[in-house]
Length: 218
Image (cartoon, rainbow, N blue to C red; front, side, top):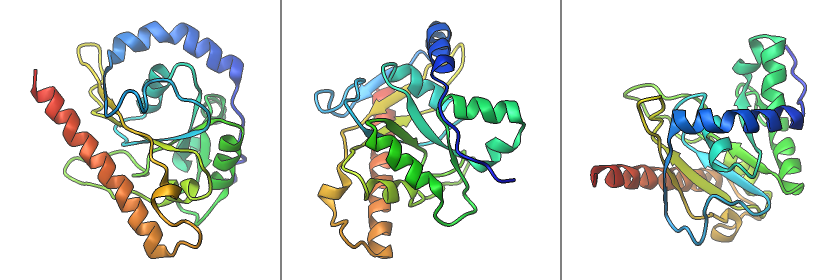
């Protein structure tokens, strides 16, 4: 089934944020840590790429709560768009960007860059799938492909996925990463892309370790 990229429904998003803020705050009860709050807090200025580990479908709802001033447009896998037409409309309505993981390349990069050029925020789960206990999935290069073509920073975020009424989510917001400044992105080879992607994965790993250290202090 061919899927055409949709657009956000800002009325839907406004109603969701207005009516859902308190319930989601109660559900997540996020405890937020910062690598450097002066460098990056909860306020995102201009275009940015949010990079996060993926624990559950609700991750993107959490980030809508944390970055309440902005509307992050997350890359969403093709499987989600095959449920039914109403769910597909809802995914596009909340800002989802269709990503076909079985297709090499694809319009998700172009669509992401257009969003960033307009000063928007694009969200990426580089592992490309939900976790499986006992397995670690490497980052896919999609986020690197996007970051190489824009001056927008990557803002890394880690969540422990501890969601629920009697639970509390622990989240860390990292310092912005300017990939084009740290690496030569003029004519990157496949090996260059691999190294950059592995670097981003190492950043997420270190943030996970720091969150666990912070939780252990209690």
